[in-house]
Image (tube, rainbow, N blue to C red):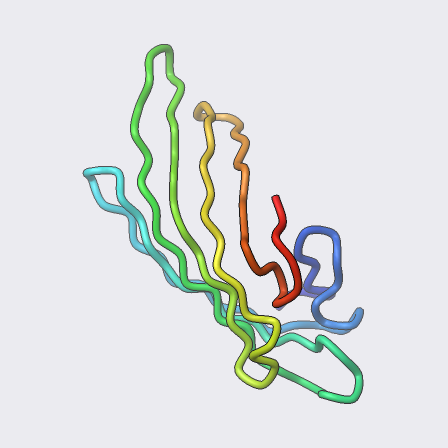
Length: 114
């Protein structure tokens, strides 16, 4: 349970608590996949909705304890389908910190975004 589900700085629960669950699987070969599910409230007149966020990616080691990563994810809303969007991402990091760059050609069904 989250007291206010914020995603990239924006409340997706209208400042209210959100029920969330996540299931993920990592392979020894560096691949991973999973699904995050959360209650959301995108607009007052629409009411409660459900966000599904399936994702998959791969992580590969570099020298000196660094790694690179690439993957995809899709944000889907059960009642508000016009806000659905795909994303690809790439990143680099260490065992302590990392950075990812995301790109969507249709962010929240409106415009391309990095």
